[in-house]
Amino acid sequence: MKRSIRMLSFLVLGLVGTSVEAGPEEDAAEIARLLVGQDRFDRILEENDENLRQLLSRGLVQRGVAASNFNAFYAIYAEEFSKAWTGLARDSTARYLLEELDPENLAAIAAFYQTADGAALLRVVPGLSSRVAKIAQNGSREAEARAFPRVLDRATAMGLSLDPIDN
Image (cartoon, rainbow, N blue to C red; front, side):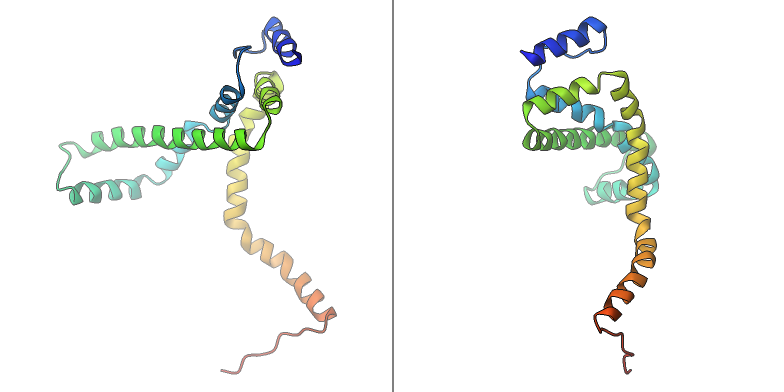
């Protein structure tokens, strides 16, 4: 009942475009659609264009075929690959959300993403995800540089030492 009233209030205010009858599966699928944008996969493909072209070319040779216009064939391949990749990621995300969140949480999150605040968050999520990925990828050296002095201090306090290795 609360969900129906909340959804009705969003509809009256014109803030939501989803069905009042949406169940957990639909809510999870909608959240996954909003969180997993195909543009992200398109960017990954663009960033790896040369490698993917080589892989596709080798794959065609292994099949004993050649494309009459490789660039046009590759454009079709990249588009379809991106769609398939996006679909798999969305399906996986939706399944995860269904496993981890109860129906009320899913409904509330789906409704939130239809608000101005939710839309604002969705606009920054791709940049945030990219930033976190870069930190994870490149941050290990900096993390090691920050952590190692503390490791040495703690180890020394415990009576541990680093001894030279005899070659």
